[in-house]
Amino acid sequence: MNRPPVVEVLLATYNGARFLPEQVDSVLAQDYENIRILARDDGSSDETAELLAQYAARFPSRFRVMPASPGGGSPKDNFLLLMQASTADYVCFCDQDDVWLPDKVSKSKQAIDRLEREWGPEGPLLVFTDLRLVDDKLHEIHPSFWSYMGIRPERIHRLPRLLVQGVVTGCTAMLNRALVERAVRMPEDAYMHDRWISWLAAFLGHSGIVSTPTVLYRQHGGNAVGTGSNAECSSTQTPRPLWQKISHPRIAPEHVNRWEIDQRQAGAFLRAHGAELRPAHRALVQGFLRCQASRSRMVRVASLIRYGFYHVGVKPNLAMMIHLWKMDQDGR
View 1 (cartoon, helix red, strand yellow):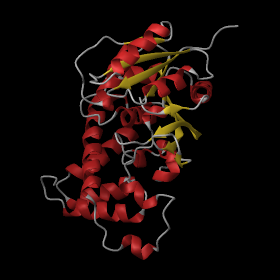
View 2 (cartoon, rainbow, N blue to C red):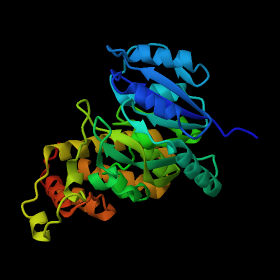
View 3 (cartoon, rainbow, N blue to C red):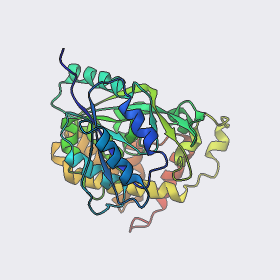
View 4 (spheres, helix red, strand yellow):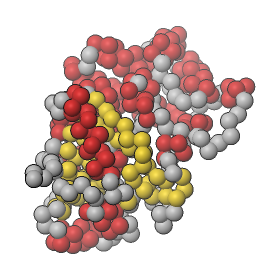
């Protein structure tokens, strides 16, 4: 019986020795039988590099470490270098401090198989899943990261909404080769690898959602769960009356920063892939950029409303409209 296709797990590390063995062991214990790991360390000062070398020695056919090179300084750069070195038809991203549930890869591969049967393997395909939020000792904080953060994964299919709210957590993603080949051209203005690949798949290919958690998403002193605008709609909060949601809408500085990052990424996306976009999709991205770039406050707000670049919740959207209306002509 033929073995299934190789799934290559791209493991990006930096000073991760504390949790790394638990994560690597969970990947090697997957019930999908044909997995190999490609790891790259970004200049760790702890024992991470030594641990990677030990795994490579123990599992020479399943674990490979990229040669040491100058650190890129960010997870995005680390994963970009890993993607450029990858060769498999299917690729997963792997953070150093999580734990994968045993059927993570097999569930994702089944979902991407369904996409291939429907759309064919030639175009970019992406599958992503929910996560279970845990503390540093793997005690459950919340059974669903999507619910906890108010993330609506179906926004991967609603392009105006996807431009303003990320829904894909990179460590849950599986990409096919066609998507990887486009992702390796990721420009500097791409904010994070997972946000960029979600745009590539949504605009140029197809995506699938696995609604069950496949990763224990560990929270500890070295990371944090960002809430941002999602905190407004978290299912853990008590719903508030509409009048409280819309009174005195103010946009938080981090929300403005997030919007400006998305604007820069949208400009980079249009420059890199505008020629590949359908006319309606290209017009959508151009409309998003007009929300920030137009000298007319009326055009800025009208573009947001026309295309529906809405966040989750009433108050963030009112606040954004007010912000765009009040912006002076240099965009600030």
